[in-house]
Amino acid sequence: MEFLYEYGLFIAKAVTIVVAILLVVGGVVGLISKQKQPKGNLEIDSISDRLDDIKDSVNHLICTKDELKKKNKEQKKTDKAAKKEAKNKPQEEAKGNLYVIDFDGSMDAHEVENLREEVTAIICIAKPKDEVLLRLESGGGVVHGYGLAASQLQRLKDKDIPLTISVDKVAASGGYMMACVADKVLAAKFAIIGSIGVIAQIPNFNKLLKKNDIEFEQHTAGQFKRTLTMFGENSDEGREKFRNELEDVHQMFKGFVQEHRPGLAIDTVATGEYWYGSKALELGLVDHIQTSDDFLLSANNDKQIYSVKYAVKKNLAEKFGISISSGVAKTLMSLWSKTQVIGK
Image (cartoon, rainbow, N blue to C red; front, side, top):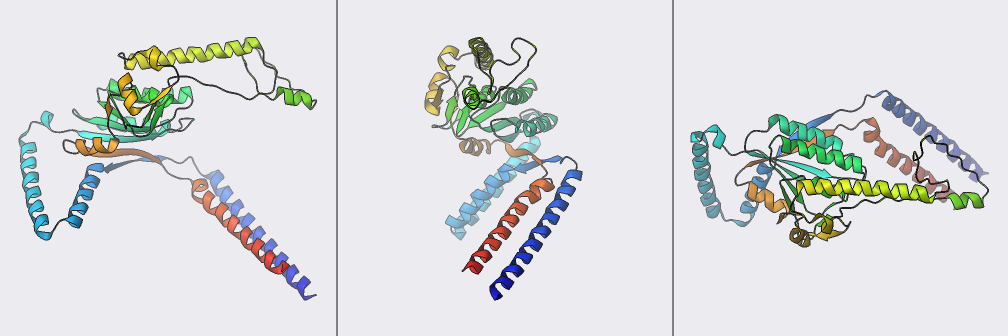
């Protein structure tokens, strides 16, 4: 009897906890549904300051007091001379800024929404001698998404703002569509470059449906409104039309790359293959073997470097989604462990 009493008390507590959780989740969902679409804001940070801080930190760790005193004295002298030189120089001869954008592309290229804001901001503030570095990482994705991303980069070139793109890991397919727009393409030695091709694949469950006596109907208006389908029976005519559409896209891709890098033997590199950095340099797909880190260190001697990032504010769903799910999981685990104890 004592066991049943304790078990009944446990069930009552468990139900109370679950009801409380549901009320909290319901309240949060209600707030989220009323919340407006979150807006983003532009974040500009000095990479030059960060690089200088790293240099200072290392010097403090490895240098003696006398060496630090000497270095500080030399640095002050150098800064004073540079300041005097900059003051005497005409405005048009002043060193420009280097703006750094990061693009880590996904399959649907949704990151282009932030990219367009970053490009717009740079165009609004850019002065003569300013440049842009895009640190690009992408294995490609949808044609329209990466086509728009490449068009955003073209906006910089249309404003005569020099554009360098650095690939430390991969810029393939749609990623290379973006990279080829640059005035200069850098790649790490083992970065994956190329894959100038088009691919589409779709499963077909028609035989499985027939086997289980399931009928599927699809109605279209227009001979090629739907060429291939997942559930209907595909025809040779539909397959041929689909392949022709892929070939048309491939020809557009090849023409786009050839336009921006006219020296390429396009039929040699547009086979859908990819190459590592060193071979990509031989083929003319990139201009230099260099990491983005080395490029920034070198540029820091001549330019002030800033990172430009458009960050979207998180809404309540994003802020509380993870914490709610983890809280529910913890509660359920706690209830499960108590059940195990009672069972013993």
